[in-house]
Length: 147
Image (cartoon, rainbow, N blue to C red):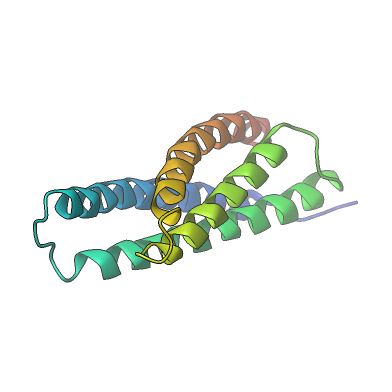
């Protein structure tokens, strides 16, 4: 089958992954700031929580975009999924991100379980991001010689 090059799709994925990692870093900084302010009973800037939520929404959107790009690009290039460890690792990252978002939106006095779940899922998400980055890099190497 003579399919068009999927290079443009992989470029979008690379930029989205970079932006997701930047968003993760910003979320770690703002989340730590909110946590520290809460524990020291210091007032936090009014913009901090909305910025954290907006950045989290952006990261979640990019992670879902990355999933879609991966599925479409892999099906287009190979005609099937599951030829590498990158798929289960990517699905784990999507799951962890959804757990993080869901628990983060529940944080409050009525849900004391939400904050520890949110924080621990974000630590696991870091490991997932590193793993998906490494497994994705091996996939990118398959495409570079074709260009």
